[in-house]
Amino acid sequence: MTMTQIFGEFRENLPTEQEFLILGFSPTSVPLKLRWRNNGLSADFVADYLTTFFPVSEDEPNTKEKQAEFKGAVNYIANELLENAVKFSDETTQYPIKFGLHLFKDTRVTVVLIVTNSISAESLNKFQSLIQELINEDPAELYIRQLEKNACNDNYNSSGLGLITMKHDYLAKLGWKFETVQTEPQVVAVTTMVQLTL
Image 1 (cartoon, rainbow, N blue to C red):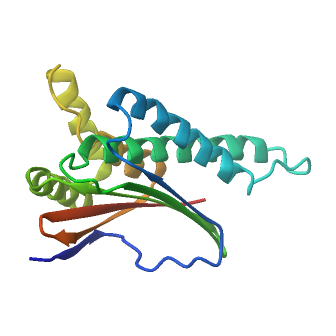
Image 2: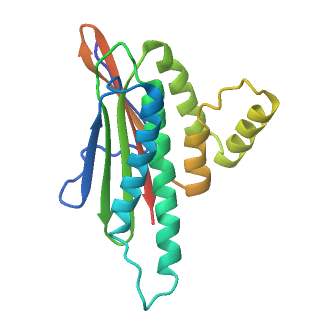
């Protein structure tokens, strides 16, 4: 049985006539501890890469500050997306993790960060429930509730806090696409999209 489901603010068919970059990772090629380090390095690379499109201007003194703020936001979001993709990939499949970014310059600049990974059947419903919370609830209230859960329970898995932070702190638009990419055996991939307008 095949499926395609879209949640939130997900853009299909991103144009490729402006800047874009795609990276691919094998989820099982290196041990998880080494993968965490690679996630950080990949996020640093993406943030550094994008800052070249926003050079510091001598005529505008606040551009250096804006560039640093932009770099920090992209680094945080890229790192969270990659960590989630590695942590929640279905280890029973060999489906690769794909990370990409697109840069659009119209009246405003929009950076679209996307990550695709396989997801296990057990994680699917739990993740879609979290997505419904992210879509339907106030980000500030959700953020505070999540922090309270973490403070009250040392063993609580802070699942979702990174996504909540993206909406709360960076005013990012989030969207998801779930699709069956293989039927025998069934492999479901989830693409998480984060749109950041500067």
